[in-house]
Length: 299
Image (cartoon, rainbow, N blue to C red):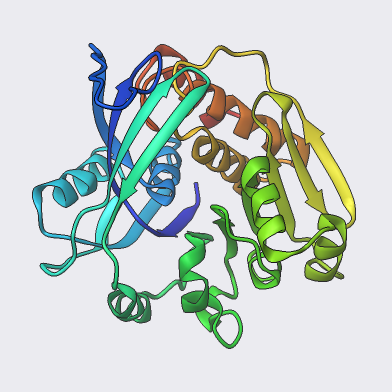
């Protein structure tokens, strides 16, 4: 298995399964409330560790009980959490999620003003011997300021765009993940009308990939002027939270194992389907157990 370093936010998700969102002054009752680990990079770390990889997670968080809880969730999954800095002047990251099948609404709160802490943390990390690095897009400059860090020469690198689109974010990592809705919104915000033209500029002469998930419509990988697609098996989701993160982990697992593009897309879709079978980004269901067994075996 591969040595993987992941940098980004981690937090706690508080999930409420509801038939609909409340109206003003209304109290909607639900018998299903779940507290689970969250944060997109942390979700990817969880799944890759569950698939047997040697995963280290690097983050800046607080010393409060919720921040400790978020770290504990990762540690319980087998992630090396010694790279997480717990600092007294940093608060927790918490997301309140109202979910019900295909519907989902979120309210997120987290610490601000942690850029100096992140810069100090990243400066102390050595990526020598690491096979792959996955990072949150807000940390792009810490890895690529003035060009790719020298200790990243041997590693492949990926990011989840998470609503951010720029020439640098498409050009510098080897793999960029996004969902179609976020990509469309970002392109409108940046004024880039033609994704194909933007990709041609960002990926000129290279093998970099942009992978766009479209829910039950499937997934498309844009690479070197070609587009490779795959469609998921039909599924009725219990909760869509974290499906994209599970896809990214399944894809990276297969890619690092030497699978071809189509097989890696299918692996991502398989783990994403399993993640939709329970509440939260990291459910423990029979389908999750089955998917992990399938993906951890021979490709």
